[in-house]
Length: 256
Length: 331
Image 1 (cartoon, rainbow over the protein chains, first blue to last red):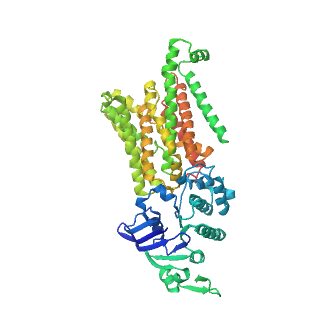
Image 2 (spheres, each protein chain N blue to C red):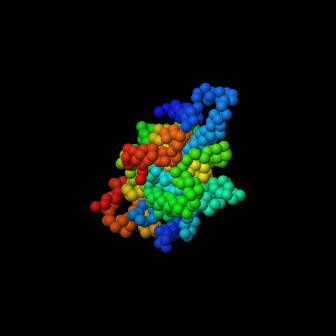
């Protein structure tokens, strides 16, 4: 059981966005994708989500090509949070979360306990009847997260979540809450890939990191191995100072 | 407002205004005459004719066209992901009218195809304009440019209608002008029969309610929820063209019902298309019937085309909505 990209290339209007990217996402792990703006992180998510086709190479979900898998079947195994969702219709938070159940059919009453559970985990209890268009940016993002979680909540083993910048609009407390929630998903048997900008947060919670730069993989593996001084400098153009905790269990990057 | 109460009120209002509309008009019909008619007793023959052959089909046609126009407005707004989209605003209605006018001026309606050909060409015009607006929207990517393209297409189609009226004979001119204004003047049982495709298309729209909900989040989001968005889009365009094409062929362009009604329903009953589509159908039926009845009464024995009235009433109301809802309409 794996979500796998093999030697994937993606070009758009003659310009290479991704070059020879290979990765495996297995159930039970968090893979964080980091890299500078324009590195191709969101394009990679689109490729893995099946919304764009690789110009070279292949993407398979449990050894099946997306072209052999119906959209409906894919949606019961793969949930995706795009970087930005704009919605101009006054739906309530609860109605949006319920939309996550569309691939499974059934009615709203059936999924009520699930929605309550997820709303509590994301701190949305008080907002459930609020109108989405009146929410703050962070509240909107948590609503969309809740919808994506709802999609696969009862079928975690062997399913995959792709989050594109899930913590971008969240305050520190909600960022940490989300990261430990991602850890819970993984413990229930899901595979989680997330695009992150905060490399320390990524390093702290992810099992593996993928560093992307100009559409190419600069490094993939355990966070401490990937985030070396040289690589961070080459990727982001800033010189970090790597600080190790005394017991060597964790490292932190300071950038000035 | 509590939902069940709102539904009951809406349905009651539709029934009451339908009954009232049967009694109002240039020929007054007394309650006693109406009562005996309801009981199947014969009254003055003229009363029978007025109520059964003129007013009843007209009332039914107004209800059906109003329901269809508002329901398709709701669906188009969902699919375009913009609360300001509307078949009349983005040129679907005028595209249908253009083809209908062309059909009339080329004298094709006297051919063997007759009215079906007229409805068919209105349908074709509606299909082409909807697809055109969608294509432009996909190319440019932003919703506001798609709306602007729709407005331009609307203007082009209306110019075409104008050209056809310029080319037409005096006799044709009246009928061409009729497309641009919208009127229930020609309603009879034959037109009610043709109009029955409209409720059918509304039912089909309703079947896609949940998918329309997902599409309001975005095409990508809907795809991730397992929905084949291009197929859904094709279906909605088809149903819209059927509803708009039939409406335009029967009664001409009716402005603002499709734009304002879904908006009112969303404000009171929420955005879920399971609610918005049937709710819009009921309120659209109610408002169009009331507008037509008003048009028959205010300058009796002459009458005001209903399209003029809906634009006169809907326009200012819409401006009020835009001002009052500033920042919430998403454009």
